[in-house]
Length: 318
Image (cartoon, rainbow, N blue to C red; front, side):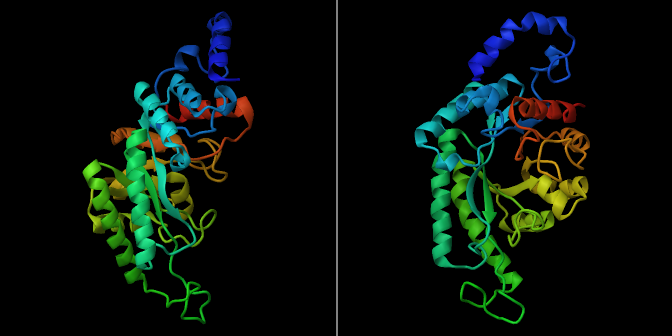
């Protein structure tokens, strides 16, 4: 069912909805459309059963249901024409464009190794990302700064890339140096790369950036408004827990949030994280940025999409 058919069907059923104090979300129809308190950002595919395959229709469906932001990790793979169409649609709907992935390496030490070839490739990618951001009206772009430089086993002094393992201090310095060069490219355009610490236990073993205090130290060292933290609540629950205190410690360097419950990485309320408390904490701190909904739906089809919307309505309640 596409968005237009969905809306027409809703209009036909309007009398029944008005006669009933509850709807498919377990709320009154008047509570279904208001904008959310925080900038929750769905992603392509999250509402495709209701809205259809068109990403433009999916964005419009999200707007119809109160979402004020959108996230698209795969934006660089879209054509320039589609990037521009998405940017225009978001602007017309007064929605914020969230992150796209500018650069991500999970199993190669591309930032930490100091390799001129690797670093030049990354700088070229960042330059291309500036143009992508302009087309889709983005401010933030995700950067995952590669893997650690590690030995193949404890008996060897040489890593799998053919060179000696670098001490952690050198890895840190190489990363900071490259991030400063990337920041210099982004600052004139008021763009921000957000560094995402990832958990090694469930999803991304071996990545160099894993903890919030590490990301904080990196951003302090880079010292640029174009280099900040993407605090993914799902990843940091697995890595370190202590979510609200760590958010407060990192606050001055956080520019963007993502969420997903744990275990399972689905919508709030399906796991152990108290998202109602965390979202309230962010409201109290007057956070007006984007909360990327980087998770799957706990159920398939229309019921699963309805459940996602209902879960955010519940977690968003003051």
